[in-house]
Image (cartoon, rainbow, N blue to C red; front, side, top):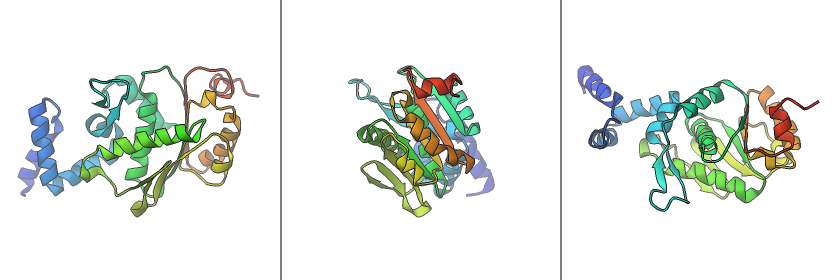
Length: 234
């Protein structure tokens, strides 16, 4: 492929989401052109929003008509992504149907599959709930095209990328498992409903000092998370 041909194809890809026919043509082009697939993979690595809005699919088991759908293009989700990239400690009070848990799950998956040596915890009140979070990451991973999928090993409560030594692990509430490792990232979902949230946060705090990231997300409930959000801890 000449430089001019490469630039023409890359230019065609810039606005490839304008309609379904164009989208299918560009998708076929990426599947058959390893060089362009490599360019797209690098763009996804550098730009999580581009990856989210073009390659991420989510699952809504409550929707019988359209359970599988693209990640939505919403300005507040783009802004949250930018804030998440900048802030090492991020507390997000939420209401339901805002896609916040899907967003944070996807962003930590992005970190794990595109960067080597990541050790990420998904924490929830119960282990089965943590496994459900990991299952979300697995769903997103499995619904990507082949050129974005880093080879992975999938087991209960775990999604690992052995070639680059990155891993996502689901754990129940509490600080013991976090304390045993220096995490690259910790996602605490529905943190306001964890009666051991304070212990987990204390155990996770050194991860921030070591360059890691903590993201706590929850709907409203009195307790440690609510006091942390409103700066009422002494």
